[in-house]
Image (cartoon, rainbow, N blue to C red; front, side, top):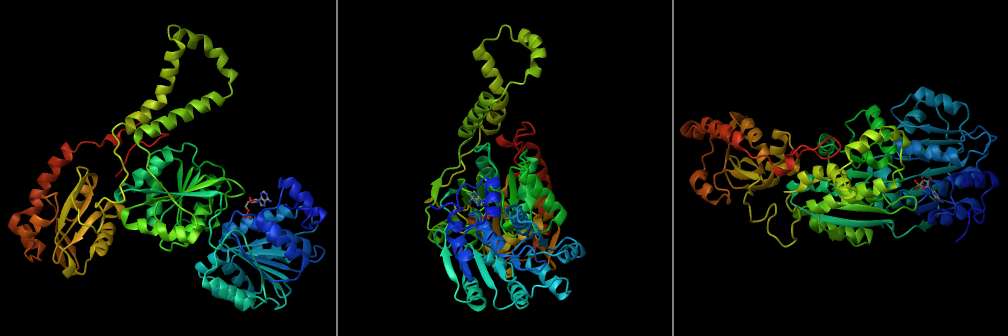
Length: 596
Ligand code: AMP
C-alpha cells in the first residue's frame, strides 16, 4: 500500500491532503494518480461514486495546470448541479495551497453573467454541467480552445440524462490533443462508444468489477405485499433509530407522497424530485447535509448529485425500472470507507428482479424479515437506554433536584427506571402492539396477477363495469384508478380484469373516497360504475350474476338504484369502521398514524 508521497504529489497538494485528514490513498487514487501524473494519456476509470475519484483526477489536474496563467486549462463535466458544486468545493480544498488557483463552477439555475464574470477573472479549471456549458459556449462567454485536460465524471449518468449531444458539442470546441479522463460507475455500450470516439488509446483502470457494488455495502431485501410497502418502510426506519437514509421511489408523485406521509407520521423526512424548484431542492439538500432530515425521499434523477458521506441506509421503496440504476442507488451509502446497507422492499411480482441485480452487482442479497412490533419496541428501548447511558449530565438541572427528589421520595430506583422508560416505550408499544406480520413467504400464492384475489379484513373488493372490451388489462386499469383517485400505485391491488367488467381492492380506509369518486362518473362518454363486491372470495359469483355484458352502467344504476343504496351503505360503514390498531396517536416525534 503506497502513501500519497509515493504517488508523486507535490508539497502543496500533500499539505492539503494532511489538512483534509486523508491518511492513505484510496484504490482509485492509487491506480489513477501515478498514471495521470507520469504521462499525457487518456484514461477510462471504472469507479463508483464515493471511492475518492474526485481526488483521483483532481490531484493530477492540479499538479499539472499552470496557476500563473489565466487560461482555462482543465474542464470537468459532471451530470448535476449538486455534483458540480461538490467537485468545485473539493478542488478548492485540494488546491488551497496552489496560489493563484481559480476554480469556477458553471451550472444552470444560477446567474450566467455572474459565472461569466468569474471565468473572465481567469479560471484555470471550470467544473460544469453540460447544458449550461453549451449555453456559455454558444454565447461566447467562455473559451475552452486551450483546454489540456478534460474530465467526464459519472459519464454513464450524463449519458443516461441525455447529455450525449451536449458533450459531443462541447468537446468539439476543445483541442484534439488534450487528455481526456473518463470516470464512470458502469460501462454500458454508450459509454464505451464515447471512449472509442473521443479518446486515443486510453489506459484503463477498474476499481472492483464493472458495475460491481462497493464491498462496504451489504444488500438486503424484504418481501411484502405491495400494499404494505409504506408500513414496511416505517418499520425499517423504526428498527434503525439512528438511520440517515436515502429512500428511492420510481416516480416524482410517489416520492412526494411517501415524503408527505412520513412527515405527517412524525419522521424527519424530505422530498427531492424534479417538480420542486431549485430553491426548494437546495433547502432540502442543506437540511439533509446538516442531518436535520433523516429520510430523504428521492427520485433517481434528483438523487444523482447526492454525495453525502454518512448515509447509513439506502432504501429502495420501489425498484428502479432499469436494474442497472440499482448500482447508483446503493452507491449512495458505504462511502468514504464507511459501511452501509442497501435495502429493497419488494412485492412478489418483483422478486425475480433481485436475481438479475445480484448478477449485475456480483453480490448476494440477504432475504430478511420486516421486524415485528415487539422487536421494534425492543430496539427503540435499548437505543434510548444507550443514549441515556452516554448522556452527559447537565448541571443546570441541579437547582431543580430538590423538588424532583421530593416527588420521587417513595419511588425505588427500579420503579423509577421503569417509569422513565415507559414514557417512550408505551408510545411504541401502543402503536405496535397489534401490528400485523408484514412478511410474505416466497411460495405463497397471494400475488398480483395470481389466482388468489380474496380481500382481507383490512381491504375492500370492488366491482367496476369496465374490462378488456374497454381496452383495460390489469395494469391499465390500475393506472386508471390510481390517476382518477389520486392515490399511489400500491393503493390499488388485486386487480382482475374480465371482458366487460373487473375487480380490484383497496384498503378499507379508501372505500369512501373510491365510491364517492365513481358516483355519477363518466369516462369517455359512458357511465363507469363502481360497487363494493359482496363476495370477498373473488369475482366468480359476482361475474355470473352481474357480468352478463351489461355495458351500460347507467342502466344498472337506474334499475338497481345502485348509487342511492351505496350512499346508505357508505354512511353506515363509515360510522362503524373500526380504527386500525396502528392508527393511534402517539406524539409528534414518532409515527403517529397510518394513512393506508
Ligand atoms: P468522491 O468519490 O470523490 O465523491 O469522494 C468521496 C469522499 O471521500 C469525499 O468526501 C472525499 O473528501 C473523501 N476522500 C477522498 N479521498 C479520500 C482518502 N484518500 N481518504 C479519506 N477520504 C477520502
